[in-house]
Length: 166
Image (cartoon, rainbow, N blue to C red; front, top):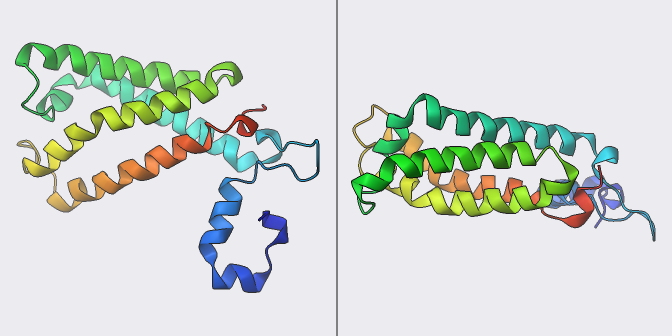
């Protein structure tokens, strides 16, 4: 259902429908007319925020590599830890910047989803190891796990072909 078709009663009865219709408001409003990001300005702002977030997080892999090395699960050989930290940081920078360009946006969003799935074992280890020797409350580490799903969904919004028109 399109956002402009929702009544106040429907929104009160089912607020998740409002959120769903807002996130997927790229649907055509009339035949032959696709609504791209240029007509949904908050999607553009969220896209820039996501690009900034991943580029910044990637840079942190180079600024504080020891932090990321400490949360690597122990099943990785010690010789792999440093290169994996650098590789994941580089991937975040490249994918974050690729979000800014129409031609690479959808592929970058899929890449971010893959990256989030790839680093999820590190988040699990960070939680189950009691913070990997860091002074981080357990509840913060626990909240981080489902937050990964929200980050995946945020990237998924930009994988849709009609969301990348501008």
